[in-house]
Amino acid sequence: MAFSASPHCAPPLHRFGLRRFPPPQPPLAFMRCPFFSSSSRPVYFSPAPTLRIIVSANSKKPYSGRSADSTSASAIDFLTLCHSLKTTKRKGWINHGIKGPESIADHMYRMALMALIAGDLPGVNRERCIKIAIVHDIAEAIVGDITPSCGVPKEEKSRREQAALTEMCKILGGGMRAAAEEIQELWLEYENNASLEANLVKDFDKVPSCG
Image 1 (tube, rainbow, N blue to C red):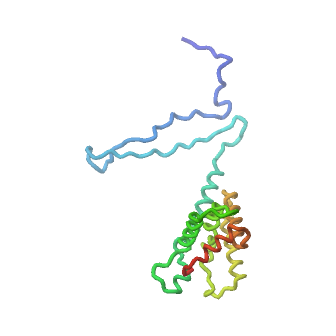
Image 2 (cartoon, helix red, strand yellow):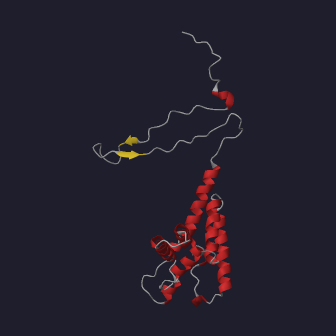
Image 3 (cartoon, rainbow, N blue to C red):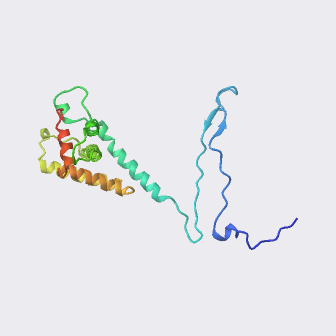
């Protein structure tokens, strides 16, 4: 039985540079591991994701997803740099010979918890306090924990930390500009003691410790 073309039929895909995709694969494939006997337990694995390229009828180049790749790369580079906050021990603890000194990340996390459990205070945004606590020493991922015992003038310490923060935000801003700008704003707010929230977090920073 022959079929004639209908004016209501969709035009051929090749006219728009489109290709039909193969049918989607099931979410899980099943196999038995060849290194064990046939009676061994089955092994489940997820197949590699199929790359899908979307082509517009009016576009000349396919969308490559570069923006998403840039965002992921920026986040990974930034978090990799921040990893040193977990491994760098605070100088005050070391100078006092205390066993098991806390890291910079330990200190920042403790301050964030203090902000979290603090009671409601008139005119104070507790969520912002938590954010400030999380980022207030973030520049030390590059410059380390500079204390008075290091003999670095206060102005020089501030200059080094500002330069480090700018570099970190530049790395993150490659794909996550809004997040980078927020971190810089929070850090400067704390550094300049420019709000009630910053003032409260500075009080948390003075809670007895060896930092």
